[in-house]
Image (cartoon, rainbow, N blue to C red; front, side, top):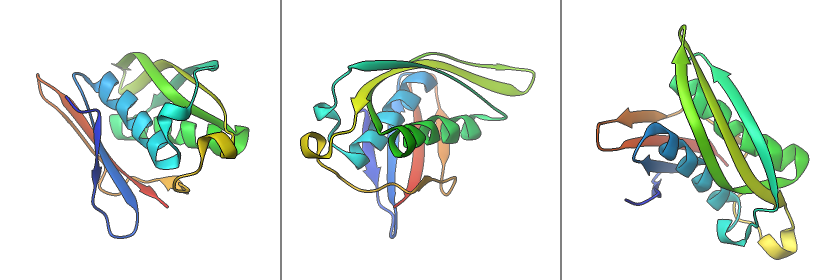
Length: 142
């Protein structure tokens, strides 16, 4: 199964990420976001961070998950390339994600620079799961 594919959009960049379950689809969505910014293969897993996110629904959880990595890049100069979600759970109409991510400080000379991502959007966002696989579609503002 492919990790992600690009989705045509007139003014922005879109992708559809896949996984055997919702956790893997979210992980591959984060990888696709990294690939928009730079070549993920050039990012070393030197630093790790623990992540806990809560949201009112799966779309908001995906939005906040990807938004967190955009924040790390913009505010902390960190670029992540490996993502491992231990669990996405729901309780009392609230969703929770627990994960770890690995990456390093962004170095423009070594990493290069792809496309500047201004924001994650809800535009055309989709989350689809079947017993065989899950997919998520996201459009980012560039």
